[in-house]
Amino acid sequence: MAVLTLILLSPFLYQGVLNSLPYINAAAYQLAVWSAGLTLPEGGKELLAKEFTSSQDDNSSSTPAVTVQDSGNISESEPESVSSETSSQSSEQTPVRPADAGDIIRRQYKGAASSVQFQISNNAWIKNLTTHTQEEIMAQISQGPAFKIDKGDAPQVLIMHTHTTESYERQTLDWFDKSFNSRTTDNQYNVCRVGDEIEKQLKAAGIGVLHDRTLHDYPTFPGCYDRSAGTVQNYLKQYPSIKVVLDVHRDAIEQKDGTRIAPVANINGKNAAQVMIISGCDDGTMGYPNYFQNLKFAALLQSQMEADYPGFARPLLFDYRKYNQHLTTGSILLEMGGHANSMEEVIYAGELIGKSLVKALKSIQS
Image 1 (cartoon, rainbow, N blue to C red):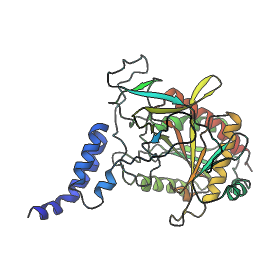
Image 2: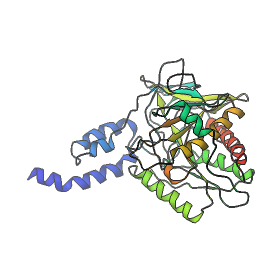
Image 3: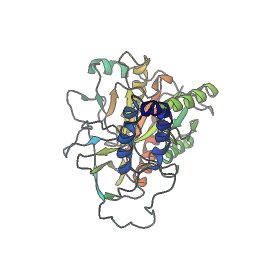
Image 4: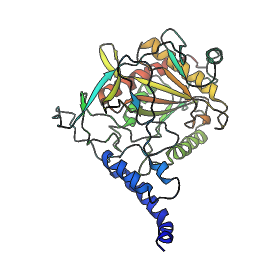
């Protein structure tokens, strides 16, 4: 009888856990996940479990870091709790460091020749985690993007966010409050604010742009890539003039001891959060045959950013991932800084990438 009751109730337990995840803090999250996993249907625990993707990111002379929350995670396991309120950190006064605060280190990630990294231009690097050779990749990107940008008022660029609630530190600090989750529905403090800066630069240059701020990852996280795909498809149907889709995220990089890394580059005497472009590749199972077309555009933007602001861009990541990039030949994912970067650093980064994007698009304007 007890087993039968558990089976009958499991769908409701599953949904209950999903609905409650946004409201619990990071510390309680892990306990809730594994406790819930004992009662959820098969696969439930795996769906909810927080993934730790262990990989040394780009090139650094310091202690290797691990990406604790890959913003474009295909499995869509819930990474963090979400806040619908602003942080207790004030933007007007320096907060007092709590006794149990964690440390933040600012670090610049650079490319370096290796078995997986090579230069695609004077300053721009690519990190190739596919089986495609350097010669194949260079031959493809030398052809340039598969599309042209039209003049006029019609939208050419769509800015959107699959993980809309990803947020940043309010101020530039060398520590973080462990009680502050790195997600919020307040668009002044999440990745939408970065999208605003990119949008501003495109509009100023006369390039048609739309910025969608739909909360695809809240209140329920699983399925957010399906929801964002629907959003993009609706825009493409309504505005067939759209050539470029920017899915703007933020990264989350931590060392094994819990120290958070804020990727930065000093540009014109001011720290900007570093940006990483991710361009996906199909391993033959993803239904994404046009991946080289997207890489051509990604490489153009990467080269333009590094020509304008040397050291601003982390190496472009070319890997077996999809991220809805099959929907156009100009779809890329942008990791704008990480959860340890401050709003000031990422807003500046949004301005810089917006300016480089304008130049890149005007170079392929019909």
